[in-house]
Length: 198
Image (cartoon, rainbow, N blue to C red; front, side):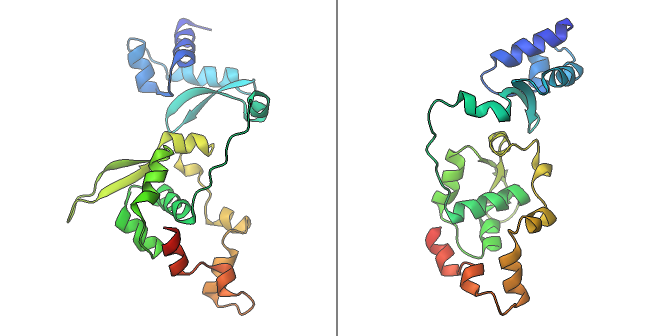
């Protein structure tokens, strides 16, 4: 292991938060860290601790198959409302996106609290303002979103075929196809129900 690799390993081990290659390079006096990161990632692959990248940020994490050994107490499961789940999916697939665009896709108004919940969870952030009338605020996902869902980048989000194979689109597609054996209230939520959950 050369000196740059050792320095990168030490910096990431001591870092309070994941770091980009550029941040690491600046921290190490301008050293070229790209090769060292790849070498370290290969070195730690399959070990109890792995070096991974999430949204261009590098950090050490426990191997997923060993996480249960380190869990001290059960975490409280915090369920997202249907409105928050829909808003998160829309932001992830269409970012950057404004609240009005989220509402246009959902077909109902989205309560401000819905986006606040996602921001408190650290999964979305304000990404700026759209050029245009009113300059609306636009939202995008965060590296924490990628890390929480085990994604390296947004390219790893499931596509239509994967969602269809998992059976997640069947009820919706059946309603739009007009199949008589599927009750609309089983396959889709009414706009009033969505509005209430917002």
